[in-house]
Image (tube, rainbow, N blue to C red; front, side, top):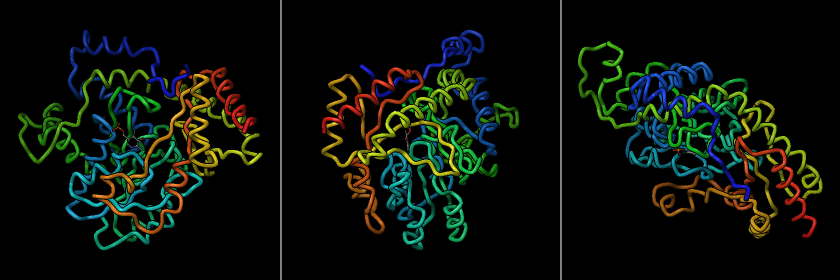
Length: 378
Ligand SMILES: *Cc1c(COP(=O)(O)O)cnc(C)c1O
């Protein structure tokens, strides 16, 4: 069976875990490995600061707290996304305002954002679907004119860029995920990227139960106290050790993934040319990270048949994201601005093929051959 995903495992993970336990003797948060991950991420993205978190969901939640979004205030976002993009703001009583996506990248359609702005709008939360950047220059310009925060859900975007800038480092706040389904993992975990260092102190307090314990650890204060509301958003050293093992070979992992992605594209291009399927589009200003390889079938019925066909040949393919505006909580907490021209229709056609670091060339050939076989018989 070819699984849909295998969690990334680079090799040194067990040695790093051993070091955390036996050498550093520190397994709670903010130890040596957390520091190394932070330094790596800050260097890689060029942000003022980057804090590891317990998930991307929690990084988004931190962003919602940091901008102090209030009851009834609005956040513009795509409906075609994971629930966390909306959840983080809904927890503070804010209203997700869903905007349609572009069918080419499946990202929020930047041309529709301005129509969704009201006098209650506080932020735009963009999602870089499949590690392919949104049209950020346009989005930042709209945000600047309307005094809105830009929060990037870059859960899928580690090591990807837009006009040479790291995804997650372009808006006011960026959120990464290191869940086991992402390109680099710590089991469960994530990071918040702060473009502006002025938020660092608040972010550290928020992440450490509302205390200034981070300052205390650095010897900047001689005792720590309760400063503000907060929660526990810092991950353990064990998770950070696991992640660091992959960050040290991040470039190699990225190259292998990109090679498999290219291979899929080449081996399926004849189906695309024949007009049977559509393949992902990467805008010229974006460098993606092969987070995902998807195809678009003609319709839902064809996609369901293809999933079954591949499953019979021991290949697991998946679809995802029932658009949030049609989910029970989405209907209760949010609203759709404008027309759903593409969100539902495109999401019903999209099929994700297996993509993970350890996927082999032979497996990609086998999967592509079976997709071609399906269309030969149709
Ligand atoms: C995976 C993912 C998340 C959630 O990440 P966690 O680390 O599991 O909280 C949020 N948004 C998007 C777009 C994702 O793909």
